[in-house]
Length: 209
Image (cartoon, rainbow, N blue to C red; front, side, top):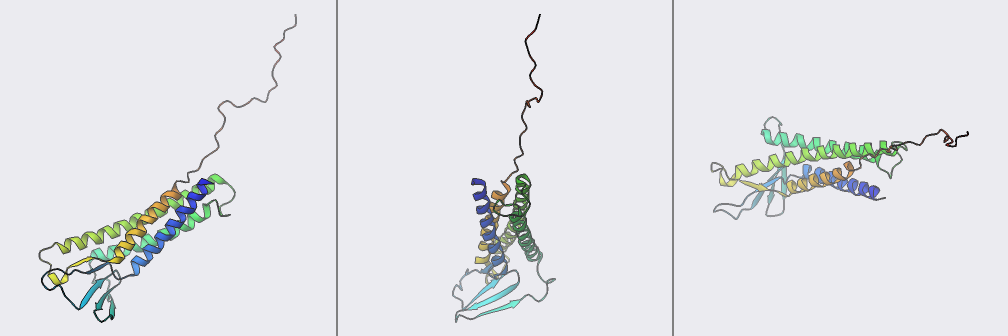
């Protein structure tokens, strides 16, 4: 019963992590304009995401523009976009595999060892997907920090972390925790007795003279 509850908790955390990865990938607030320098007061806030850039005006209007060409994007943005897509696909695949081996489902047959192995495989796939998203977020974060502290970067083009990157981080860590719980469903084979009982009848120890 405890193992079943652990599987349900891991599946729920991984599902929440998948939602976080999807929301974080879609939102354009991966980085936002930093208010540094002398001109702190500005009427426009700039946001940049994986798919579009947006300008938020003080009047409440928001205008977004999708990137025209993939080839015009820098390598870090292209790599982050690709890794996040791979992470989402692996998370979906891991959830599908894990659901077939969980004890609360009827898929995968009645063999408990086989179902445990299927669940463990799904958990490993979830962990790999989470690692892909962690690499993507870490790469993008490192690029923001480098550009921010670069003395040759103009003040009006400096960016800091946006809300979407934190949502993606949270989704990645939820996936790791959920995948770890599912991967902990290690199969336990039946242990054979060390000294099997003999089917031969006991011999009589009485001797007749």
